[in-house]
Image (cartoon, rainbow, N blue to C red):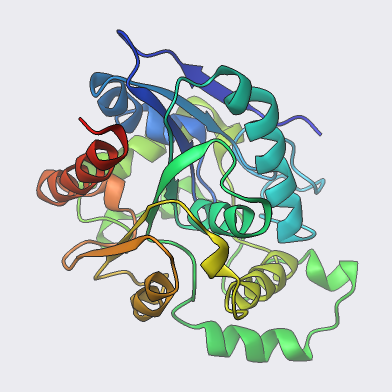
Length: 289
């Protein structure tokens, strides 16, 4: 089961390393277009990898377009492997996790269950902690049998990836059309990067994983500084779930960008400036400079 990763050395004497953990359906190149360069300009080495089932990592189903996973613990094991074999032996310290959406959720779980590992701090951007229509999704999953022939179907209302269906006017992840088109350029350059909707199985495991995070004492195990950034106009993740979550962290800080949509790092210059100010505050606190 090959997993794909990328590494960028710092441009000068490294201030540390940032590990970029992407969201569902994303891939290394999406962040390499702009975010990685901004991190390099700040003096950090950068590491990133494609989650199993997306990007150019192994895809578990014969139909590559289906976003599927057997258990979220598989994602956690893949992250642990990446950290143990690539990041821990090679990364200049300190190491900071920069995670988006699903990547935030998986990192959060791994830190709670396996410890902080090489990380000295983490940014959870629009973390997947509760979905906007989660109650409806749970109701549907309750009546669907948990057998492969059903689990491997697309979730209702989703389907295969269609590039021509990506209309900016109807998107709900960013206000910035130029950055929205970055992703399309990569899909055109390498169609293997595209991913369709999630399967029923992925959705079932996502709901179970979000439930696991709510267990008493679970998040309280995370012992590094965490900055959680909420997108006030998020239409995928329920932002109301973030405040109570941060309150459970030993060293948690909550910052909301009220006019941002889900993909904060792909937003307008104005919104991204607020994000980078928050990033710089956290890293200055970790580095002491």
